[in-house]
Image (cartoon, rainbow, N blue to C red; front, side, top):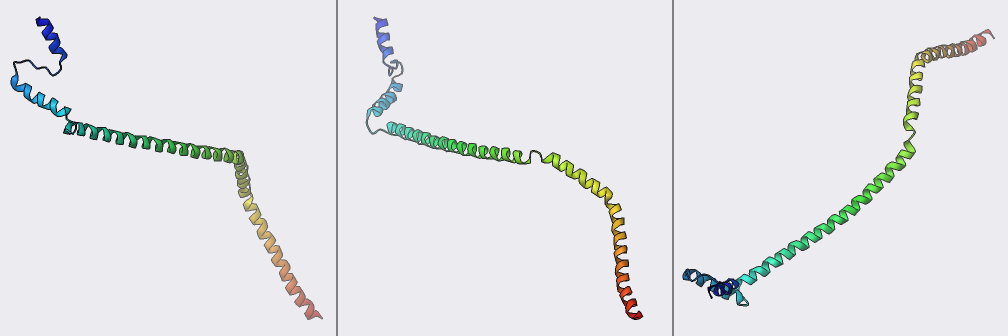
Length: 144
């Protein structure tokens, strides 16, 4: 009989041993308040559920924005890769051409002193010809 009574008592989760009669009263009041339709506890539960739903919706919206940002960044990276490929195709042989140009410039710089001497000689020759032309015409006019 004692086993049967204990098993029946353990099935009731609100059971407290009769040793603590002062502790039983508050739990009975709480159980009664939970059963009323407009008690503060269920209201608080609904507020928490509503806040959780709001947080979930905000997280969903944020995830959607991140998906859209990912698509935009994917498009930008594809455009940059295409631009890089086309630029590489156009400028792929540029280093060799630049090296050839540098060799040509260095060759011209090494020949520059020779050309300066030739330029000076040509100026002297042209100056001499212009003097001959000026003074030769004057000398001819005087002889006549």
